[in-house]
Image 1 (cartoon, rainbow, N blue to C red):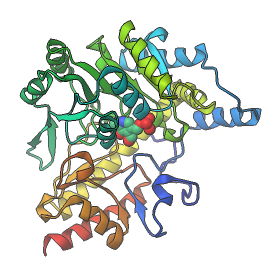
Image 2 (cartoon, rainbow, N blue to C red; image 1 turned 90 degrees about the horizontal axis):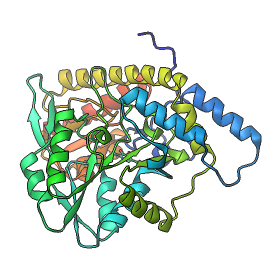
Image 3 (cartoon, rainbow, N blue to C red; image 1 turned 90 degrees about the vertical axis):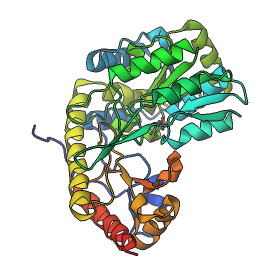
Image 4 (cartoon, helix red, strand yellow; image 1 turned 45 degrees about the horizontal axis):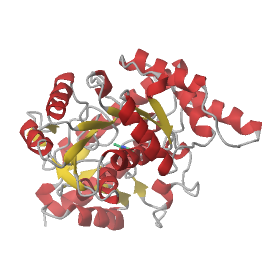
Length: 392
Ligand SMILES: Cc1ncc(COP(=O)(O)O)c(C=O)c1O
């Protein structure tokens, strides 16, 4: 398919108040860490936001019917996931949503299931609410082509879910950083185990639009109507700073509790740009841009695989089914991954994320959502550094 958009070009983000770019003091650093992209958002989103800016008044926001229609139509037509307006609570982000949900549905001291390695804010949301991290770790599978992937360890999940003080599971679907877009069978098994043990599943589906060719996202809400699903267009359309997300919760009682918690946490109001961006994203033109983006990201991923395979086969790469965040095994270096992150930043001037952050040492996570030339230069620096330390 022809790529109609200019992902090879990117505005200079330094000095734009970018967390990803402006956190590094050294101007030569290539940031391949925080999960946002170095691409402009879809033109349809940019144009809608410009129109809204031109209005010139930015008072408190009423989220209207057009918002719910865009959201519900998108999920029904793109993902076969039927959402009804009454089931939706909008909020300012998936992380605030998860934190409020934990607060609403568990008591301090209780365990909340996660599957490590997993998105680091799961840990902080659990701990900040006085709860305990109950890990049901993913199982690594080495593939014949030299890459690796993960599967769920259902025995570990069963053990975790059967504990008396465990009532909640945080599922990451698709999974950051394991790169998995969970299959229907896997998700059915999660629903079966959690259902049997009265564990409510909270599914973080923020990466759901970012599947690689041939990989399918299955909305957990199509399998388990007692679940709470969190979605946002922010990862796919690069609008994380606009702070808009949705909690989908068909169960009335649970939704009332979550709604109360969202209010107590004061994350029930959104800024005027979030809904505008969401409506424009979840449109035909948004879809056209997104399809092109996914092709570009897949080519970036293939570049990464090719470079590691030819230059550093001692460091295998994950099979990436979704997200733009490949996960690399650097255990051959026998160094702590936080130290590796710090040293790569200092010496190779590339900012990656350490595996430690996600609960597992011996890995790094690389954000490939940037123009290909920059990625190539960043990967070249990382691989050169890793090779040098492999030989030590
Ligand atoms: C799995 C996952 N959930 C949530 C977030 C952040 O969500 P938000 O910015 O809406 O709080 C991220 C960001 O990287 C993520 O990877």
